[in-house]
Every structure is written in structure tokens, then in C-alpha cells.
Image (cartoon, rainbow over all chains, first blue to last red; front, side):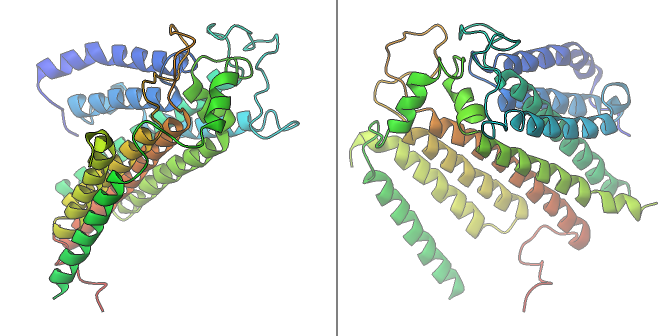
Amino acid sequence: MNRGMSIIVRTATRLVYALILVFGFYVIMHGHLTPGGGFQGGAVVASGFALVLVALGTAGLKGVLNRHLLQSLEEVGALAFLGLAFAGVGTAFFYNLLANSGSIFGATDPSALASGGLLPLMNWAVGLKVMTGIASILIVMIIGARKEAVE
Amino acid sequence: MKRALTVAGFLLVAAFLVVAATTIRPFGEPSHTEMDDYFLSNCQTEVVANNVVTAVVFDYRGFDTLGEATVLFAAVVGVLALFRTVREDER
Amino acid sequence: MTLGQMPFVVSALLVVLGLYALLFKRNLIKMVIGVSIIETGVNLFLVTVGYRAGGQAPIYTYSDPSAVRVLPTPQALTLTSIVIGLATTALLLSFVVFIHRHYQTLDAEKIKELKG
């Protein structure tokens, strides 16, 4: 169980990592209007998790991240993406069901936030999958590689 | 002998790649743009979104994104499975 | 050879550099870095294939509606390729950690259990 880096780095990380998470969620959410989307925003949030792991050490895992929660959230993201793909299977696989209709994501103006049909929901599912998947890989590799040094 | 063969093969592949890069189509004139012209002109009315790249990734060619999500899931499961056996015989 | 073909030549040079690191280095980590450089060269090539002369990004927010736009499909394929490169590198590095744990060395010449 290592303590991480010096106290200046630890204090700065505790202040900054929430801003990184907010920026990552912004990039995921506006994926159908500005450059970005699920994969890019998921990578930004995963780099925030990497900052927490490096600066706060594995002792930071108890207070900030929970390993089993991350693994189950990744499965939820993958199943949600598959379920959204099957949602319009009456017409075609991956049919965009909610675009151009009057309901919740079906605005007809393409510059509105609530437009795009199933696109924002798929962005959220893929973003959740990417960020929790990369965070799980990082945590398992850091703990697994350090056991070698303990023996 | 084996090292000379490796060096010769590597130089052959390198020369082939550089010559192919200079005699390919001129930079800035793609061929067969009919599919992309259809995507660019019909994206704002069918998929009501302003970002054509996201519409191509998730709506027009969503099947490729399904394959990519599967590859990412397989990689995460593989890494988790590799590091799991060490913890068991440490117990 | 005109100077206008420079983006294609740069991506070919990146692939050649990655091949050199993969073939002629003996440390396993340097081989993994070579694989990653090859993937970077291929992604660069994919993006530069879809360029139209004088074009702008294929996004309609706050932009001129009558401008010439580059092709969006190669950019979508590059997104997929980058994520697959990440998955490959993660698995390769896990294998390197395991090999070091078993053989206590990272030299490719000394790992000989599968040889003839």
C-alpha cells in the first residue's frame, strides 16, 4: 500500500480531478454537436483516473475509487449499448428510432441539445464502458505488478 | 547469415513502402466519394445531428462500432483474467 | 517526387521506423513501442486518405454551410483503429509483465523454451 507522491502533488490532485471529470462528461454529452463523443470523452475521464492512481497511490483507491463498482459498471455500459442497438429491430438493426419524431430526443432542429435520436444515449453507454474499462485495466496492472516487488 | 537476410528483407519492405507513398493518388483528390457526399448532404435531415463523424460512427456504420466495443471488452476481460491467477496461488 | 505527397511519405516513414524497432531490438519493451509506432503510422495514413483540397471539418455547428468538407468515413475508421491499438498494447504489456515474472529477464535472446 503506497502513499503516492509528495503533499503538494496530492493536494493539487484532490482539487483538479473533479474538473477533469466534468470536462470529460461535457465532451461525452455534446458528442452530436461538437467534435467528441463517447470514445473521446471516455478517454479524457480515464486519464483523470490515471492521475488519481499515480498521485494518490493505491491508498487513494479506498477513498476515491472502488474496484468492483468499476467492473460492474463496464458490463452495464456494454449491455446498454447492445440493448440500444436492438431497440429498432422492427425496421433494421441499429435503426435510429427516436430521430425526427416528437418524443424525448427527437427535436427537428439539428443544433438543439436534445436532438439526434438514439445518438446521445449511445454516446453515454460507450463513454461509460470506455472509462470504466480503462480504469479497471490500470488498477489491476498496478496492483498485479507491485506484488512482484513485494515477494 | 540470418542477420544479413533480415537486413535485406527490411530494406526491401522499406523501399517498397516509400516508393508506394510517392506514386499513390495525389494528396487532396480522393476517388469514389459518392457515399460520403450522401452522408454529408443528408445528415442534418435524417439523423438530426450536426456532427457528421458521430452520425457515421453510431448510425450509418454502427455495426463497426459494435465490433470495436467487443474488442475493448475482450481486452479488459483478458487483462483481468491474466492477473487473477497470481492472486489465487498467493493465498 | 513532388512535395505535395509529404503526408503519405511521413506515414510510410513511421511504419518503417516501427518495423526497425520491432526487428532489430532485443528488449521486449522496445518491441512493444515499435508495434505502437506502426499503429500510429497506419492511423495517420487513414486520416490523410480522406482529405479534399481546401476542405474543412465535417461539422455543421457555427460553420459556413456551403464550404467544401473532407470525407467523414476515414475519420470514423481511425477512431475504431485507435481503440483497437489501445486494447492490443494493454494485452502485450500484461504478457511482458508475466514473462519477466517467470524468466527474470527481458532479453528476447534468452527466452528460449519454445525453440526447436
